Length: 262
Ligand code: ADP
Image (cartoon, rainbow, N blue to C red; front, side, top):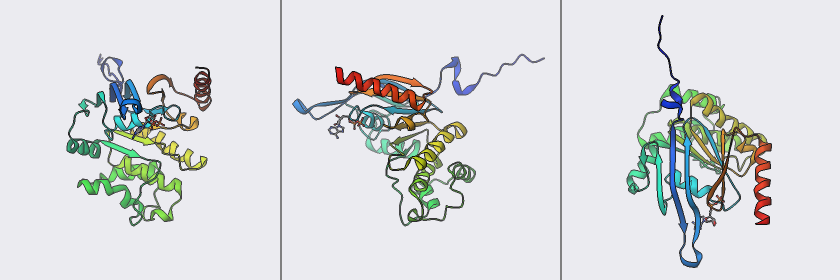
């Protein structure tokens, strides 16, 4: 008889979910004097590893600023940002550029593919630039996951918008980053192509263990996430776990109503 007990490791010791990124008392101000805007006004948040997190809130609430600060694309005015155990606030430009390249993936609203390269070349370009050899098996799995097998020799102009964004998703996944940030990744797609891309993002979290953070204003897109964070006026005001599109929409209506009466 063995008495050994296996503790599921992905939740870490003591039942805590591992943290991929962290913001501590983060303030971001733009401008000065009378034109000073507090885009982020003291944000504390943990982004869980291996989960899909959506950031929502009205236009101007600080969603993009929070994403940019978490991803090291923008500096904070005060407070700290950590990627796993690395504090990125305070890193010098060169180190920060290196960290973004080696440890973070990005998917933007515009697909940002190079038109002269085919799909596969676009997917491996960041690794080629970094002088890293793609892991063939992983690459095949990623290509399969986003449904691009058979389209790898196509140039971006020979692909639909949804397919181009799938190439951008595969490009982000291929380097196995610790975390992928998406800024309205389905903003340019019709609802069917958007649903496909969101489905692949979901699959990459469920089957490849990817950590995903997505800024969106679309309740349907947010419903693909495990957790939705709500921002208002630079504050984290609420969150929802395992949301449905209806619940997200109701919560947003709630905020709108409160905004109008306050
Ligand atoms: P969201 O993504 O939720 O629409 P943002 O993060 O883009 O919101 O913006 C938050 C606030 O910061 C807004 O009031 C916006 O006008 C302001 N802001 C964002 N970027 C800049 C900038 N580069 N210069 C000045 N103000 C900015």
